Image 1 (cartoon, rainbow, N blue to C red):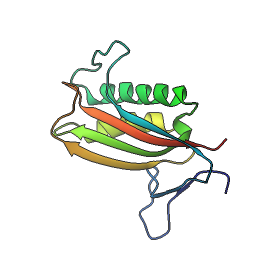
Image 2: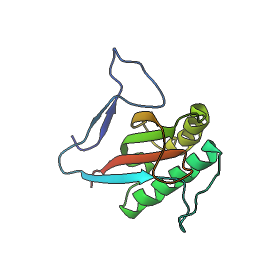
Image 3: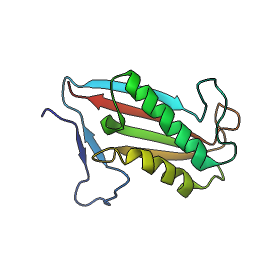
Image 4: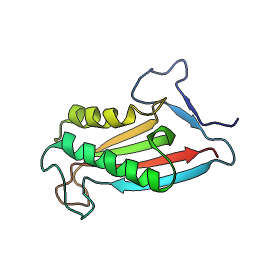
Length: 134
């Protein structure tokens, strides 16, 4: 095996938004990206109360972080999404899906609704695992 496999096995729900299983071959470079919030390069929160705008900033930050490690959205294996209670989940997922559309197959996705996040006013946080076969 010389590539990352993202699988949607028979017997499990099929979705264009996520895969169920990832198989990373030996020798792949693993990249862990810590929780990204909707802050700009100066640390200012972007998007106010608009979860879709915040999610676009989060995905932009994720893309920047991946690029620093020589990877892109297409190398994502797994994504964890934290959403603050009461936000419009569909708006957040819609904004994230636009960024994830660059991936040939969707990564594994775990989402949770939380009471709050570490950045005051943040409505969404995303952490990720990527892998690159070199």
